[in-house]
Length: 330
Image 1: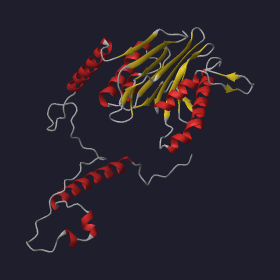
Image 2 (image 1 turned 60 degrees about the vertical axis):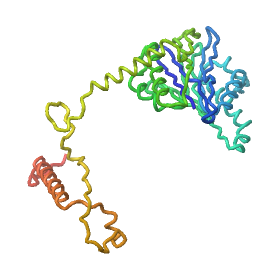
Image 3 (image 1 turned 30 degrees about the vertical axis):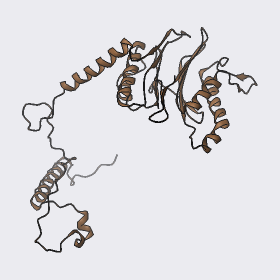
Image 4 (image 1 turned 90 degrees about the vertical axis):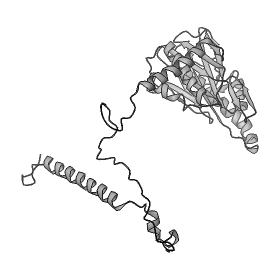
């Protein structure tokens, strides 16, 4: 498995991927999931891939030279298209080409054609764009409301992205957030592993030198891992414990709610005389479906519920206008 994340911000783009692949508990390897395509001054693109490794490697190899016929007869490649949308179309066509070539054989072997990709960058003449590409070659584009994409084991790293990332987030802060997201995933999922590939692109640069590979000995990654874990613990410890007995607290846990009543405890049924035939087999089906509740507890709860309902009904009638007043039509 893998985890890849890409962020589209006003200041630029951030791409981060792990490098672990596994085909079973004893077949764990490292393969890079990121590919950078750069023509300085004209275009800059990054591809992140997750899913079946043989398929993603075939697509990545083909994308460098794949040609897509256009309506004008021109053969489009990622090196001559004039928009990232057309570059994403070329990638989608390459995915479908690999599917047509290999899907039937994979199906006979019991292997699904399963990949997902993130593709983003900037081409001279337009702004930055970021896409998520699916197994069928179709894709969606990131927006201001959804400025990031994740593929692979996304659930562990998503909460911190949702709380921090907006389109206005500075690049360095976004890169730090992506690394925290990856650290949370590394902590909770063994199918994601080091080293990591981090790529940071500044808007309208059409090239970047901010490309780094982070392994277990990277001092910044170690500092971030230790700081994030310790400060999470400090924040957790600073939150007040539940005050079951009330007392001096601004956030009591036991409060009355007309919409949410505490569950009733089920008590043991009264013991039957020795030799009685009143076993489970002789009880009616309806009785088996009903949990036994002590009579006194049930009556107390019912009376309390009835009292609350009467109070709410009285309050509702008090708020209503008198029925004797004539109605008005407007």
